Amino acid sequence: YRSINHRVDSNSLWLYRWYYSEVCQWILILTITLILALAFIETPSSLTVTSDVRYRSEAWKPPCGLTESIELLCFLVFIVDISVKSYLIGWEEFRKTKWLMAYILVLLISLIDWSISLSSSCHENLRIRRILRPFFLLQNSSMMKKTLKSIKRTLPEITSVMLLLAVHLFLFTMFGMLLFARTK
Image (cartoon, rainbow, N blue to C red):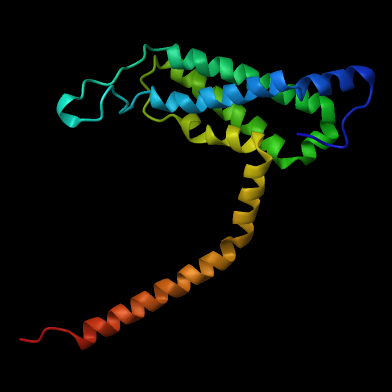
């Protein structure tokens, strides 16, 4: 999270340059890609060698702990990411940033759900962290944040138009049913 309010001592500037270096940013992008790609191999997955129903074999089920260990590595990278960001901009500025506070919340919920998954030997029915995974992509991309902000800003106008459309559809359906009703 680039901010004008970051620390300016020599160690912090070195850390800032290192964090925004090409290598670190690629590691973060690969981590986000990896955690999103886990959806293709986790149970229930329909990913098979062929999509032809006649020749479809059983989907590969990863052993218990494999996807969880990959997830833990991703979470560790995210924890380092949030730690560096919080150090660079300072705690006061960090607390004002809603995206970074949500990042901590999503990480905490994901880690709690991850520990529940391991304690139940991978037999849990509901995995909340799967739903939260796209947040890591949203949080890392400024363009995604701007898109989400634009959607949030235009949602009331879209909602009123959709409501007006629904009312028209309902009324004209009622008129049609009354006008063209079958009589015996």
